[in-house]
Image (cartoon, rainbow, N blue to C red):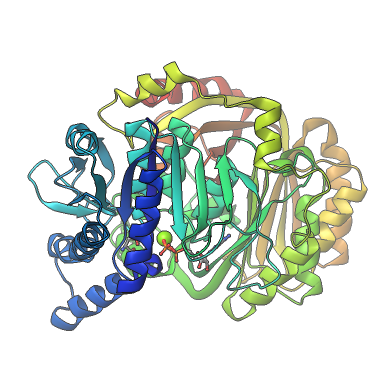
Length: 595
Ligand code: ADP
Ligand code: ASP
Ligand code: MG
């Protein structure tokens, strides 16, 4: 008999009528012959309400008590859903995370799933029950209640689908699928039929709140197809699967992280080990850092800029204050009024000038770009917060995301063409793991024969990045990594990008003419550059990846010239003479995660 996991989000169980509707949907699935496990979130805005209560009684509520409190939202809703099912004449049992054996680590409010004991759920299903499982919560080794982080019920649902070997995992929510961007922000956003795990993972981590990004890590690791659909209609929604909707579209979605904050650590000595000290201090607090840019400034001193989620700014600043003297930084600045606009697409890795198109769209909309980082399937730009909505609209328009790509395929067409490709043995071997959310790496590789071009004193004004990368594109040069960040010298910015070694002379020539035209300070270039890539699943949210990487490279006295992070890869640019050493020491350090 097939097993189906049906998750219902907060708005889908917001009142008694909606609870009864969710119950009816589960009963219907059961009557169609499925074994049904429901995963339910707290009703409506209950979690926000509990957070408000906590802050009303305490300025700094202890993390343990916070999780104890927040878990009650889901405890309420599962009981009500089970009662509704009973009232409608079917059998149901509600279970808290602890009751169905959801074991996590002990990092309150960001707990990672270790293992799930499926015995009790299976027994209840065998007895003909609909099992109503509480989302978002688990217990640690000491039976303390933990929570997985805001939006974490999605992760409960996909993890349960994985360990139960479910045939389907439905995410029932208040939108009828995944859109090219948040339809609440942009009415012209288009619902997609299919989106790939990789694209959804990046989009979710870059602000597409429709799915908790960690749920997509599970889906990808254990090959769980996800169906995102409306709780309030029977229409098919979006399938999140291994394949993409279109082969040719460079961009499949855009996302906005409205509340981002930029931090710059000024004038640190440019020697191996400094980045490591900074980022391990932050990683210890489990803050996911993004858009890391290091500029080599004057006199062997560097400025390190990066962004963190706005609500983690305080925690991050505290972490850096603690090490500022030790690393010899001359100052610390931050900007809390910035947003991150990103575009994501599997197709961009194969196409030229995608970044230039994004920068031109922003320039034409009059949006100034403060920082840029790119990785193989995403480009992020940091913009002033009051220009963020306009920025999102502009890039959505520029890539024609409101229109279905000509070669787009439906899920039925993709299935007909490829069949399901679950590697059953691989899935089973990973499931025996007792650390379900442990870091999973797939590869550590180096790409030699690269060169770097750096422009210093780039004026921080509208249109400069667009001019620059359009001109480089016109010269027929393929640009790989791009980073733009703050330059502590005079508030201007500095831009570095990597190209093929053979293109260095041409690249420098173009860069020099851009430099003259925009009155920039300096152009520098270096050949003999290697890109070192660590690939895997959920790398940015597993904050230890950066820490271990920097630790290892610093230990081997290898200087990191550029950094680009995403959920799928962490890339660093280093000198070619150390490429093999770097690869070897990372392979040793990550041996366990490489499996
Ligand atoms: P639930 O309570 O069901 O978990 P959420 O509020 O967490 O629902 O997620 C659904 C919301 O996600 C939608 O109402 C929508 O505004 C938002 N959203 C953000 N990005 C996207 C996107 N790319 N596609 C669809 N919805 C999105
Ligand atoms: N109730 C939790 C939250 O509001 C978990 C969830 O809804 O997924 O974040
Ligand atoms: Mg949600």
